[in-house]
Length: 364
Image (cartoon, rainbow, N blue to C red):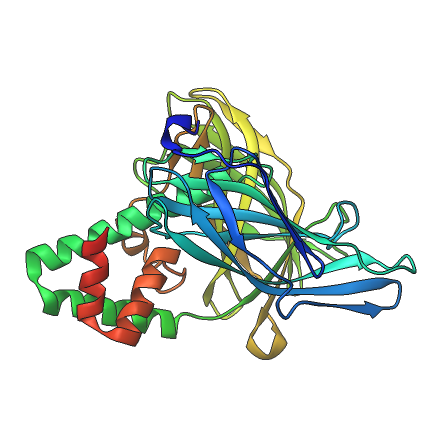
């Protein structure tokens, strides 16, 4: 739970409405709105709906006594119809107490056209994560789990690079970043579109499934049932065994697919909410449908599916992510992208060189 003692000042509800945008944060929010506006946003009528392109930037302020590590916002044009809500999450922040910081919003929403002007776009706080891993917010979108996972991965990857620098020096750090950038550039690209669908795929066939071996993992995958039809994959059932002494609340499963030519691709991840007692088992029927295309829209025909556990959330709020060595040990580094923090640090190195990277690593 968020520690209220971390907040130095409690502000009244932050409510700003300007040219179609309303930002509404809780009265006791540790983050306040300094400025907002409609920016370059616009609403365009298309048939029976409005397409609302929200393109703007908020200026926010950290009013707590702790450094802020991540924030998640819910952006909505209406609450009911599909396409009316979206989220914006910003991890890997390092915002000091009293410091202002921008959050960019660039997304598209849909809103029914009732014959009148489009309604206001609402921006609400879903959660913020602080340096001591405390959290504040309604958490309607599951932000606590995701922001915490990103922060754990960030600390893991920063520590790995710091150890390289401390033990082997600048040249070793430079070589490590060159390797990271080379993997990123050579990684096979795949357009992945996932949807929740109960409809059966026509002419579907069962495909081979497996789970990667992950020593020391708290939750083990024991069964997966999947079918494919052309470039569509549908996951019908997943079963897991809890090897831990804590009750499990949710799992996120990374997906790998192999095509007819034996090439392997990362196919995103699938969250699964389930309850597993200590040393118990559980299964879910996600009915997740995944459409896979290579660059230029070339369909990818799936031959088999491999899963690996990349996140475990326990009922007490603890979170597990794989150690940094897992990608190398399982030969995944050439297939799955690095963490958001690894990508951010690699971009600093690419744009500004090793000196700027060292400065960034020493800042946190």
